[in-house]
Image (cartoon, rainbow, N blue to C red; front, side, top):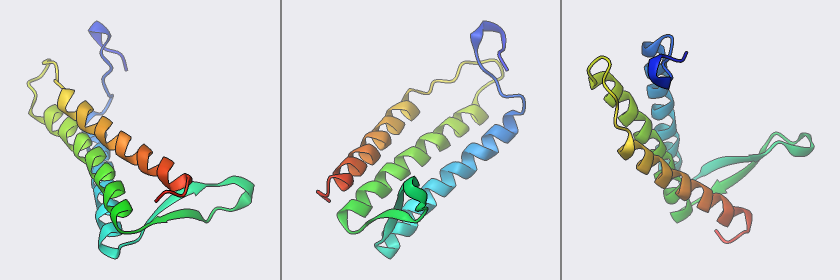
Length: 120
């Protein structure tokens, strides 16, 4: 829903915060679980009717992919925290969350490219 000033607002902000927090927890949990098992499965394709195609990352590759997932989860948690601590009607500065999210995106995409070319 668009509010005055062109800013998008959720109809139910508490639901948006809960869903963002749950997504952040799932991303971080998936990354940590994969590192602890030393096997981080990343779904890669659903083409040709094969729903079970995964890249399995081990060792340093799993650690780097987990770092990207943690960066993404932390950026979501920062956004939720800033929303909850902001004064009503105040603008929320999300520069730190954007920088961390972009770092996570670059790490994840870099690992996917290296994995798809067989480097890692």
